[in-house]
Length: 225
Ligand code: SF4
Image 1 (cartoon, helix red, strand yellow):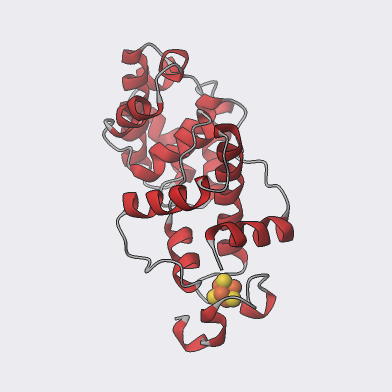
Image 2 (cartoon, rainbow, N blue to C red):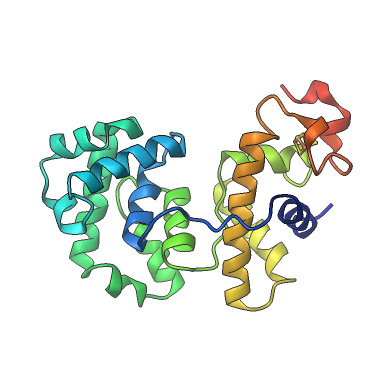
């Protein structure tokens, strides 16, 4: 079993996922901050509140009193912290000249810039890199760690950057063009999320899993605590 064969099996089973759910790159970036430590359904509610309050814009979020923003995004949880993070991010984006300006930056400069914002960690920055800016960056999250540790391809507790490089170096050997890498990383992360949420859950549903014939953990259910 390889990183590429897992992708092929998941894609064959679930089909294209067409992520990220969001109407504009800015909405995707807002969603990437709001989705920290919460289910996507709660993010959808928070974004709907922002839209309903005509507040889903860079300048409005940056200028709004923090308490008002916290009220609007309340469904996303940790709303005071997230309001602060969202404002940090929007003010930083304003200072750079906006989304169109940073879209022109190269991959390293853009990722470094996003990571410089207080409250934007690796996963949030890479969600933005991949889904808002179409950059070939593989997103690592807790679902990725759980699924691939069970598949025996990683330990699961490696540093974020170690895992990102591992996925990217394995996959980019076989997927040559940048556009194909972006497309594949986009689909692959979405497929990992859907599979880990529905099947390879904390309590795994191995009998329903499309990877069960190759998965070492499926044979050792005592390992799946
Ligand atoms: S067989 Fe079980 S442990 Fe392995 S990937 Fe599928 S659900 Fe997860």
